[in-house]
Amino acid sequence: MLRLQHHFDRLLDPDGPQSVGSFGWLIPTAQHFIDLRALSALIFMAWPCARELADTEALAVLVDREAEKRRTEFAKSRAEAEAGRRRQASHHYSDPAVDPAVAGAVLGIAAKLLAAPDENETHEVMVPIIDRAKERNFSMSYQFRSFGGSSYPLRAILLTSRRDRDALQRMEQRIESKGFSRLTGADQFTR
Image 1: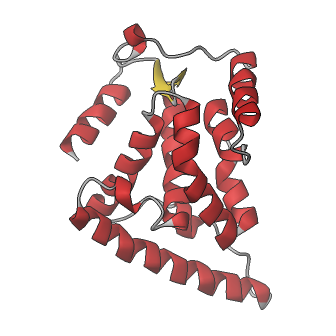
Image 2: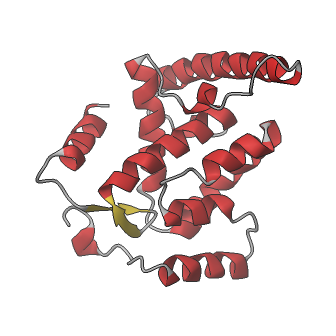
């Protein structure tokens, strides 16, 4: 967790990098934080699909409890929406956790996913998370998979449902066509 905090501090430093690697592509640092929020919401929504990515079992147990609490609150919100009393609220999944350990655990998982060296590897890890979120609530999962302000590489990965080679190759071509550059060894730590 301390490493994660130092990583965020470096990115938020006024003299910090202007761009950062995300799934093997360089994106503006500001979008990295938006991507973290979108992924965190999907992680909570699809939990326990990302459980094995937690740094420790103790952190996974904390997220178990938080994810269950959020699902319960969302179900209550959904029932009230269906009864016509109010709108179904996505904030049950997208709000950062109040408990810093839970927030750190989920942000750590999201940061690991973003740090993957390429979009194809990440897509394989993301498929169960994406599928579970879709099962729980398709429209809500779409909201997080196309989160406003998130990076194009993230949206391309989260919205590519097919796993065949052609779909993944088209995903790479779409990202490249939007003007994104591949992360190189020299870009890994500074930019």
